[in-house]
Length: 327
Image 1 (cartoon, rainbow, N blue to C red):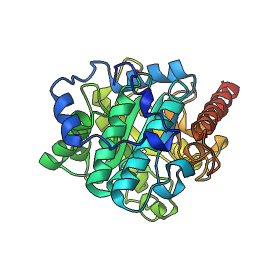
Image 2: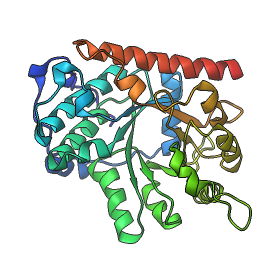
Image 3: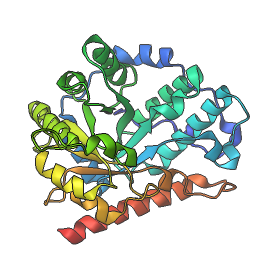
């Protein structure tokens, strides 16, 4: 991910620029052997990116073919859709680079298109790595143990070469530890932004804790083994922006975790909702916006990437100003 960006030709803006996505086999086999994770702790590296960008914000890439700019709207079929969302995603990455410190790439949006979608995902991740001002989060929410967890971790770390992944903690510590260490980090699902999550996450255990609080305690315990020099762990937590009261309580239980905070913007979370995710010193969270940034254009807008860039700048300004006012 630390090579200079030589992929400007991939920036979207012309339908004639479409090319077939790279194949995972070609990308992975060429890169795995030579890729050595940075020695720096993942949390320390992320905070360096945040400091350089000026605000702890992240743009989520959740591309849907039907929502693309008209100039990129694909013909029917999975192969055409995969090419289109790949080109769009690379254009978004180029538009937000230097404005935000991280991008979160939703694997499901690509995998729905089968092998062509997986190839497009590999291409987008490869492009994101060439932008050396971005942390790359692969949002694939894996949850398994043993050799299966090791395989999932290897795919994220060595084949896709992401910096962070999202994982499920439901199977305990064994589902978390393979994804953390040697320069890599993970965000474990703790308190999600979807309303139906309450049915499980708000349940009370015999000891009085909620399920979410029990998971938070697990994440804090497991994450203590991967602290960086900034005092934060390479094992973070996903805590939704739509649960501010719970977020404040979870922050006390996980003082050393970075919170990945989805749900800001189109999902209903506002500035006041995300502030409880931060520590009193204004650190400890990464606020993610997806639809409100990547679809901030009119369908017929040929310069759609400029609209995306402005939306990313607005996101950075909103969160930066709120944290500055609280300081």
